[in-house]
Image (cartoon, rainbow, N blue to C red):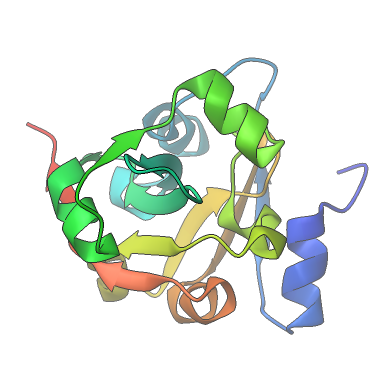
Length: 161
């Protein structure tokens, strides 16, 4: 790896152990494809979704296993919002400054957005998520991630059929 990403510096600052995995990030791959490319179980690879409250205000980040779908109603309830919607790719990129496929809560801590993590993550020791740039995934302890990004735990994912 040529350079250290801010997400890695943040983890080192907080003395959180992590592993980096590289894949071909030249084009967008969803979390399921990334799991397959890296040979990881889909429920261990998490995607970061940018979700907007209908009434405006700061976006939310929803961390969800690659094999689950986002239930917007459940997330809205967990966030105390009437209604939320997925941000369009171009809006997510404009708001985060990151490319879709490389959006990571670890790269966005300075924005102080609310971060929600799907409840099944708490059953795992480690999860893998974007390092903040396409082509890089970081595997780290779930408990450390939750503490670092002040993630709220809620069940808002639905298993894919």
